[in-house]
Length: 322
Image (tube, rainbow, N blue to C red; front, side, top):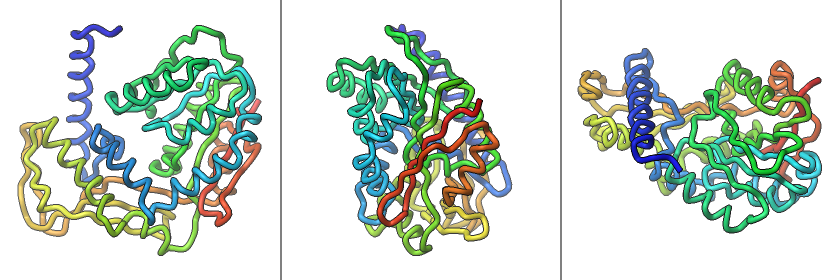
């Protein structure tokens, strides 16, 4: 068990990195904030609410796919695997997969939100006593070590659901996919979700829900910066905006300043003009062929694809190219 002093050191390092990333983004032209910082405890809870919204088709479509084809996915992954999930959150979809994985050795949920991760891991350990649950609190975009399981795994398999890969520009997505290929190694594979290109109105409604939960989720990033970094953002002076850019094939989510103002962050003053935006997220949409071509440059070969009846979403299984 990690000592209290080690926990404090880790928290202090995390705060320094958070501050560095926030200041780098707010000094940039145009301004941005890394979307990985959405997921403090409250942010994770808000995202769970988003996944239940009528407009947010992504989770509903992906759940339908996993519910229908989990046995086929388990067969593709194969027996004796250590399943490593990137950005595990509440691990809701993962339960379908764990139920169908033949003789899984261990499940390694990797998430940046420590409190949320610990709670979910306790629940999974209770519900899946035959599978060793080995949580890792880490940013999966950086290198991290896999924990040692009590039993030896035949191979590692990465599960990357939720279309999170769409938050990365294609060049950065290739880097991340290369890291996954290295982590899995020979005999390993990747099961990943992607949001498919479709009618513009369906896409934009998913990021501009009528209840305003996505707006709360977006603004919570500023609330977190205030709480953890001592900033003085006035949340009432920023509004949520999300729109689809057809040329780049992505949704762009922003926080828009309502007026000219100065904000104190980490001992610095950041100036905003009325109408200036902070980009908080990009969400790229793909066709299966487009994404398969990107993955191929990272050393991954497409083996199977599954989609929902509307072809809104796809779950793809790749293997590490020999």
